Image (cartoon, rainbow, N blue to C red; front, side, top):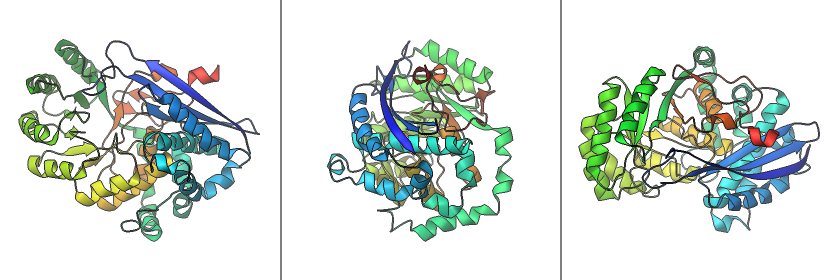
Amino acid sequence: MISRIEINDIRYPLPGNAGSDAIHRDPVYSYAVTRLFDDKGFIGTGFAFTLGEGNDLVCKAAKYYADKLVGKDIEETMATFGSLFFELSNDQQFRWLGPHKGVVHLALASVTNACYDLWAKKRGVPLWKLLIDLSPEEIINTLDLSYLEDELTREQALQILRVQQSTIKNREKIMETGYPGYDTSIGWFNYSDEKVRENCYKAIAEGFTAMKLKVGSADPDRDIRRAGIVREVAGAQVKVMLDANQQWNLPQAMAICQRLKDIHPYWIEEPTHPDDILGHKKLADSIAPLKLAIGEHVPNKVVFKNYLQAQAASFIQVDAVRVGGVSEFITISLLCKKYGVPVVPHVGDMGQLHQHLVLFNHIKMGHEVIFLEHIPHLKNRFIHPAQIINGTYKTPQEAGSSCDLVELAK
């Protein structure tokens, strides 16, 4: 039984221009952390990611949700978690502040993720194993499929999982081999050209076969020049992604993406405002075969549904610490599986939680594994940091979701 809850506002200023992009020039990587204490001594840890200011507001909202869990048994809670998620996300007091977006939905992510962590710890297994071992019916019972009925009914979701059951063994080898990471830290926006070049050489030496550069400069020539540096150092075989972090309006995006085609990017990420689905569709059509990736700032399953319906993105970067947590992540992943669109998560969690979800997506759902973003700046803040060796994510073995923070263990 959950006996008490604790909410923590944790903030980590980053040194040396790390984390900077075209919109967020001076980020403070921050977590609104929910901890659920049960009467057997287990602690479930979950969080949502912000960039500093407003983290306290997310914490206040998380307490509102988490207080409702006191006195509940985690096994009973998770057996019908989809119903609880629906109830909390449509709370008549908080829904007006969303619905299903912003501060209140980030808060729900924090609480939801703590529930999944506690569930896995109570069973003594890593989160990836807990999820893979669940039956299709048990997984669907943790999901809220409301507002998706036109595209994904309960029976359709069950069928997607059932179809994959017979071939699970064929995909389990990934637990031994691991899967690639891609290095985001080579090209933060405020880094000098020399620093970008140096980091590219370092990433290649560390075994990375994919890397990402921040673009969106006031002078597009700067973006072209820096992208050229990355391609020159990386060579033709390395995947290079370019991330504008929503900086461009649509006419700018259409013009600049045409110029960036010569770099042969694997994708252009967040080219314009994340709510402009039709704008993304227009851009995608105009710059094809260049592909778009979106998701870092897409708040919920309904907006992702619309992106998929419009065929406005080639890669979906859903983030379990941005949408309503693991439950909504899985829901969106099912939608993507139906549409045949790859899921390549954004990692506001620094890859800690998502390393489990990539394994689940591949083994249980049959998603292709392309790679997972790697951001190393908070590695020493986690009790069990994600292990990336020779550019490859290794399978976590500790019980839970790998989200316990050193500061909170003291």
